[in-house]
Image 1 (cartoon, rainbow, N blue to C red):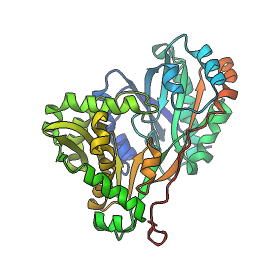
Image 2 (cartoon, rainbow, N blue to C red):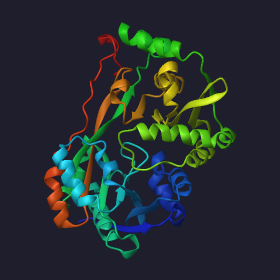
Image 3 (tube, rainbow, N blue to C red):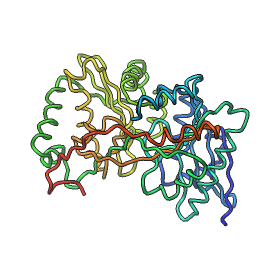
Image 4 (cartoon, rainbow, N blue to C red):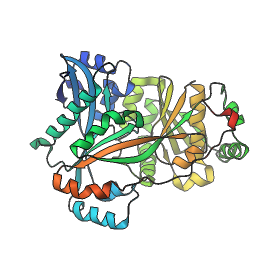
Length: 385
């Protein structure tokens, strides 16, 4: 059997430069600078990193965060009977839950574990699982109540399903919404021409209704000038979200902009010189990954801020000639009206204590994600490949 070992690091700086080069050469989300931006800007979160080695060469990494959540936040986005919710509250509401997440809590998708190709990924994943199990027993992390290993696509389940043998509970989460761009879309008009009439009308209406908004591309100086307003708009969106594990400190954006320059995009929306919304995104090779947005909900309906943001993500994707736009989770139905399709994700969770975990298992296994109507906005012959 292939022998792998694991070392746990408390900061990105503690990991050797050669290890970062080995791990992150082809993956933005596991570069030192990317993870460091979140680590240094969010001091209320405890970050840990598990690096997997084979013969002293780094061949993988797992990104961990330890946070505190209430049971009500956890239950907010799951479809489960009221009786089951009462049961879960009875067992879990007496204390705030300290949870160890494996995965980036601020992003959707497989951004928590990276394993190089041409290795025994099942064996490496097993080492990560055992290391997490050992970590939660250490006094410095007590009391960790639960572990949540997040966001795997269907193609990864043959590796990750071994967690079920460790009494993890497999549960679906809201899908990642992805728009595949057709190569012949050279302009936004090309994209609109491929939409069915009623969806093209919706897109045009969003632009027309938001015509009084002015848009500015923000740089690091703008982030600092408007930091309070940006944070408030972002937290407005978080308050309206079905589920959010933690509030991101938008100082993270300053760090990301310093590292990725114009590939990290923030567009701000103004009405009469008042900042009322923003979008953010990262150009990641041939993908555009949508990050957090913020908006003034009191003005959203009148000025179509959110529909305009979705239109502008499509414009950005076309302008940067990417193959797809990753819109992330939430608001799945409206994202499907502009052509995004769901990519289904699976997470795994378990309570630290075996007895409680066994009691929770039949209830958690009944969890369903909230349904949404999936639209088909493109003319049949013009759907992106």
